[in-house]
Image 1 (cartoon, rainbow, N blue to C red):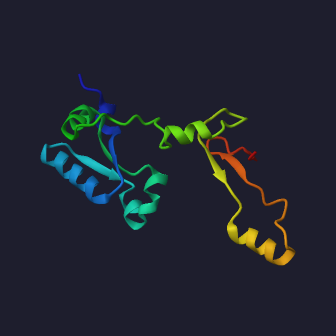
Image 2: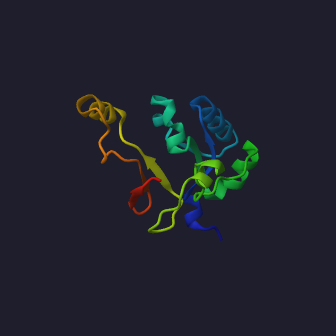
Image 3: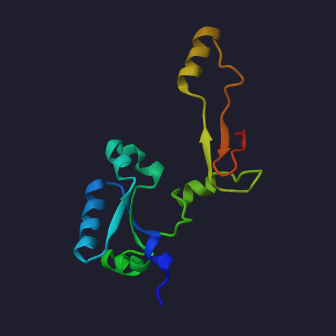
Length: 144
């Protein structure tokens, strides 16, 4: 008996930085009879610098076809919980003090505000500080 959710749930089997690589992989799966979908292709095509921010162009297949698709592409399926950050970045980012999540980002003051305060006042304003922001709970704290 087949699981009905496995036929409707999509799983990411590969991620690509360039649209043409993602299209080649999708066409290869289609040639093998596996229906596949590309997620975030338009974002990365419009601005390639967003590839890192969105995790690349994700090639998704039905969960029931994931093992075969990964075998065809010669890759392991990517777990949904995986973090896009590299291990070096993870070790440098502090965990959130509220929820202990490692999914945090660094927010710094826009350079035009710093320039404007230097131009008008001759010194940077004290409220223009660098902060860490937790993407999970939204808590923010000052960077040390």
